[in-house]
Amino acid sequence: MFNDPKILALAFFGGILPSLLWLWFWVKEEEKRVQPKGLLTIVFILGMTAVICVLPIEKFIQTYVSSNTWRLIGWASAEEILKYIAVLVVVYGTNDIDEPVEWPIYLITAALGFAALENALFLIKPLSLSIGATTVSLLTGELRFLGSTLLHTVSSGILGIALGIAFHYKGLRKYWHVAVGLFFAISLHSIFNFFIIRNGGSDFLKVFAFLWVVTVVVMLLFEKVRRMS
Image 1 (cartoon, helix red, strand yellow):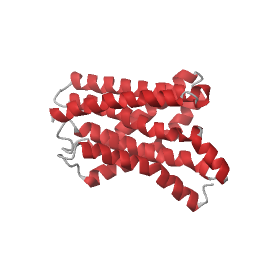
Image 2 (cartoon, helix red, strand yellow):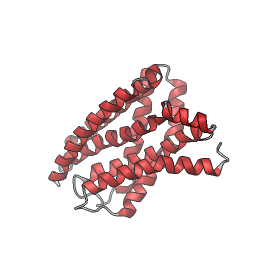
Image 3 (cartoon, one colour):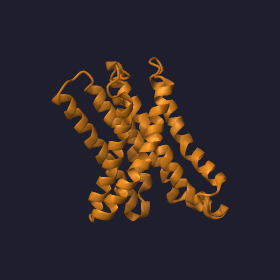
Image 4 (cartoon, one colour):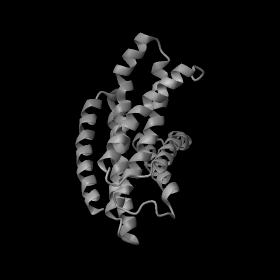
């Protein structure tokens, strides 16, 4: 399946298009403060790179962590931390982030890059099946990648908002906000994974509805951070 360029191309565009649409939405929300497109592109690509970095970590966790609960928490923690590192690699030691609202913008950009490649890899298998099998596969469990894109956006958005709120803080108060933001991002991610895996993903619609409720809350908090800017 990895040798068929058509399948790889379809999987890539199928994975990246939802992320680009989401990115356009969030950047448009802050159109008065246009972010450098080149910098956003780098962050997006580093978010995609984080998928490659997280795979051996998740394999290690799967091998050496016997508890399913702690395994899910470990996977969620690795993904959230690596998305955060993808942003830090770009902005650390620079003045690229000079307003609170830019933290959620960059974290969400990295998250959408991560989701783009993750979804592309996820689509390769169903696209390699016959037409009928592909349709059935996509209309059942495989469409969970839509929830995955939303999940990565919201969870990283939570951390970005925490950093935005703590923008003018120094020392322990700033680190406290980072810790709290990571805690809620990892918790949301872990809960999503738990309910998706439980019962073979039959609770997906309920979890997806819950994610949209959280998304509305994140958008309201995003507006608060935007006004702080």
